Length: 142
Image (tube, rainbow, N blue to C red; front, top):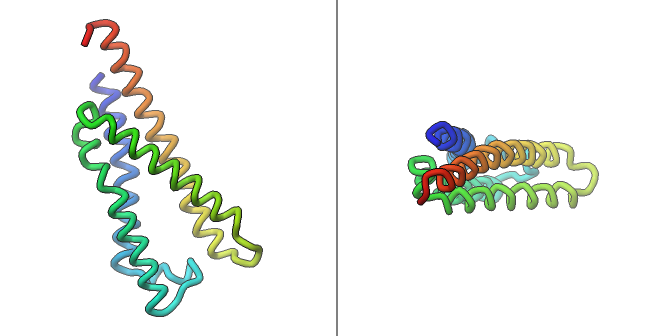
């Protein structure tokens, strides 16, 4: 059971670290990213900074799960749901972009790839943890 729990911790922590790095980059250095989203000026920087702040809010669920995945199992489900919502939303966003927005499409595609890989990694790790927990309950009782 310890190995499965640690696998879940590491998988969720890896996604968390990349998410927070991205969030802080957007929040602290929005001018570096505004152009990739076809934004400019004060309004563009504010929009990117706002996305960074939203990313930080979105990641508030991760630390408790990473520290105690058995105790906060429900947060694992919440995090997976958040990741799936991001993946679906970004995919719909990309599908709705008209031709001629190549830099914007590439930026959205990077998020899709990361969220897809993150969802897969965390999903596998979480499933392993649940399977091991279920086996232990069946073998040893509650």
